[in-house]
Image (cartoon, rainbow, N blue to C red):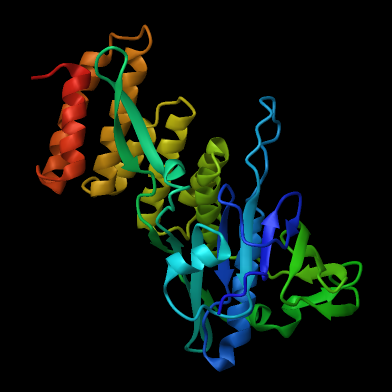
Length: 364
């Protein structure tokens, strides 16, 4: 059973809250599943990743001349692995949109930790924040809309974390969740339980307070590139869902440069970066082409290419920069043909896009 009160919300700190309001966006990270002899490793590894994701959340950018606020981001956790795989139900019960699950198992003289991010289908309240809509003029100022799910893939696998030697000992240590007084070398004054607030973090410690009144420090193991990649990608998705466009692009860029990032997820990160750039009123075509260099025939890449071209044409139609429109129109038609080769001419999304292109460019 998922225990909702084992949760954290980012305001200026991580604070335990009841289920999130619909406007809040968050992630649930239960303990990673593991055989009995590695149960502590599974719990510790999920806690380290949990805290790494927390570090990516922010209420506003700095500096903040436009006085932006992205509201509260939620990170919830549990000391127990999930009992099933109904991620939509987990999301509803914990009031989040993302579920990060994992498993730890022995491998040779060490252990391996695998993880997967589930981005659940949007609720009615969340549909708008997960849909890319481009308004196409028809007549008399009326618009029709071309739409695309902004999440390229809703199940994302990350590179496995292989632990041996000192790294394995650090992640298996019972002391990882011990609370130290005054600093990580101070005396042990307790242990993290069901609920705690993360107040401050560095690469080696987290200052926390617990629901039992303890205030002290957790000693964190070094952050492997694999766990950093999980935090960068997951944090990027959370920033996107919270309309933090610049922040999302920054995290997705870091993820794409991370040597532990898997190729498929890098493609997704670049596609979502393009969407965020477009939401900022910027041209996302360069990032799309970077994704195409990695996976030129992937349907999600072809769809995104069509959308950025539609967006660029409509942007220029609404400005005085009309000279490039004929060339952009040719590029759009070529992109639609390439998408048709992958999706088939009867694909419903593609038929709607082709109709939108007709209305936009006046083709017959």
